[in-house]
Length: 217
Length: 211
Image (cartoon, rainbow over all chains, first blue to last red; front, top):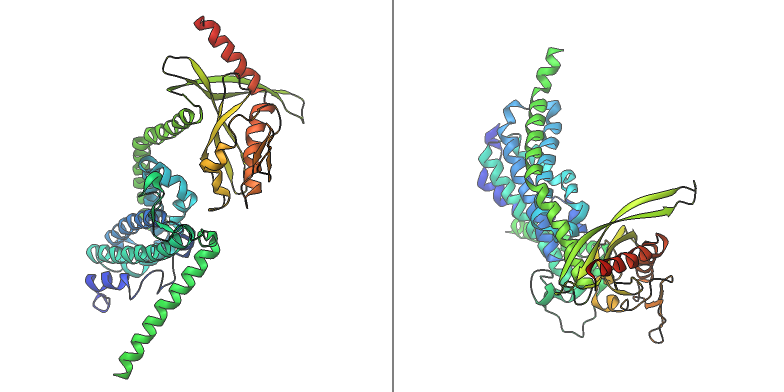
């Protein structure tokens, strides 16, 4: 049965674009919508999620032969919540400002479907190495998705990029002329929906166009 | 029965291991997290009083009357006595918190030594609307509070000139957040009798040092 499942490299590549958690699987919508109004917030969230996903996938893969089918979800959840708690405490200790900015969204990684989905689809069936490659690929895909949304939102909302990381007083690097008024809506939830909708549509359109070309040739 | 335990054994062992791990992580990081919070409050104390060089934490006992069962309530509050390089007191930094437009707003308020005037304030925590309400953290809004009275209820008003000592200019599009900051400051200072306490503590401090 294991031979039918994709190998480590395939899993890794799949996670980045062909099975991108946000654009192709439409999972993990809560952090995608909530923390993408600045690049700094989006990258921190992607980092914390990557830590949890990689650790949870590796532990689940290591324990996969001991899993009872009807208790597996419980094992996934316990493992995930343990690593989320560690990530949350680490952020509070070493990045207090960011920890406060992300607020409840760090503990909410526990209910991020993308992680439990990877445990179920890959880690509970395949070895540690494949599970780690899979987690890495999915994490990169998630980072790419959050980054693309947050770049659009931060530029349109504040006219700058890397707020909190670069420039005087952490104001970020100005990319739009000063005459561009701050488009507050983009920093608010509606801006998240608009941006996600347009980018999601664009991603699907690209995939559809490519498949059309494939069948035509 | 034994069958159930065997089935659950992985979950039980895993929970135990995770419990111990989390306890160890917390043990290692808790002092650092606590220090971060204290540091943030001390930094804020130095920022909100002009001419500050050092902030010392002081505990004050407050007695307020609760309205429902008419009983005096004593509570303790940690404030910062802010001094300049020569050790002369230049003001107070007082924590205050209350409801904002979204979630609680936590502030550190800077006061003159006699606690009659506000010098500045700093937002420690807020979840106000990005781009509108969270402008309460900005220099422009903060600057309106310098020199305002602590004796009267503060009002966030729309006019930009001829502001009274109890009026500050509200942020456009964020009237509720602006007024929330005013209310939080006024409630903390006036209703608990904190200003009198601070003024008295300042006088005592001067007597003790013989200055």
